[in-house]
Amino acid sequence: MSSALHALDDLEQLIFELVAIESVNPDLIPLGSGETKISRFVELWLAAAGLEVEVVEPVAGRPSVVGTLRGSGGGRSLMLNAHMDTVGAGGMVDAFSPVVRDGRVYGRGAYDMKASLAAIMITAREANKLRLKGDLIITAVADEEVASIGTSAVLGKFRADFGIVTEPTELRLCLAHKGFVWLEVETKGVAAHGSRADLGVDAIAHMGRILTGVLELDRRLRSGSRHGLLGTGSIHASLIEGGQEMSTYPARCVAKLERRTVPGENGASSLREILELIGDERATARVLLERPPSEVDADHPLTHAVAQAAGGDPLLIGVAYWMDMALLNAAGIPTVAYGPEGEGEHADVEWVDVASVERCVQVYLRAAKLLCG
Image (cartoon, rainbow, N blue to C red; front, side, top):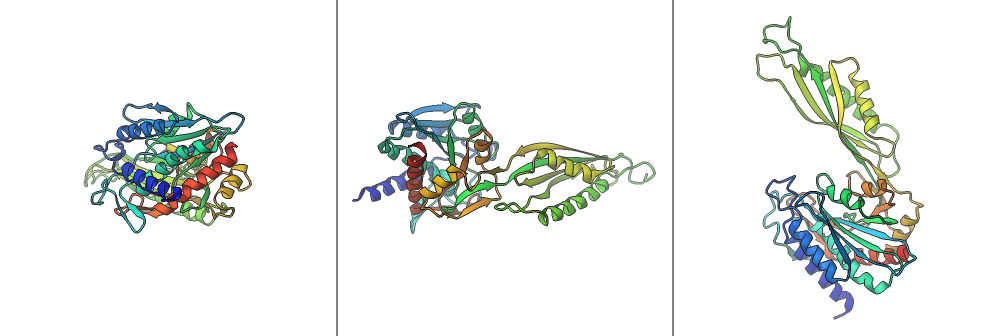
């Protein structure tokens, strides 16, 4: 058996073992196990592979694992990032009993993103043979599917010169992704009996004009100037509530909006848009949560190195969804994303192509050699 085939068998087995460990994010599904069991598995595996291992646990029961392969000195460092948590099983049958068919591993988290986690673990083990000058840092993080407390906590303790987030990208090199802002708009009315039009003020009806404005704002955004990789921002209404009963004027109505942002847009600019839209309505608005967009220049040394590692001419892309890449870039660690092929993140059928995961291992090893010396 060739060493390449043996590595592939190792990789497939590791993907199986990781998928079989239920690590559903408990902030999504209350009965989810979280990352405690899988983090212990990763911790022991990385230690056995010769890495220095530290567990970072800012919230009890939500640990992340950092493994460092120390370089000989004089080189730059590279951080590889993958998350351990998954969404719930949904309608998936035997979600945590992985199966392989036609070169694909099926199961919850196989694609998003335990195959990538397996890839960076194998990369760390194989990188021992490269005798790198700089450090290779493996971060297996908690809670990416909700609040990213894992990556945030890891970045509070660990630094690197470069980063690769290994979210699945279909073997394309992702340089940018959108951000998002969650906003809350509240309209005020006056409660009164439904027969007292002389007294009542309808908070829900007042929200109607604002929601019409949201539709118009979305049209303007999507017909405006475009980012080269990401297109335009957008906005939509996600949730609305108001009123108490049929025969009462509603005193309050609350709408929650999501604004997807591109570089140059942020929470402050998004809030200004809504305040301008509200005008003199009986309404207030505030930002609930902001996650920034992310971008690395196509001419950045990291981009060139990963592109070279991937064969010289990978397709350069941006994606509409948010990922932890933004946190690394915001922390001053230039970061791109590169990961395997597959399908079905958050869906009832999820799979990853094993050969593409093996390809990722080779790309990560070549990138480490180029960047870490």
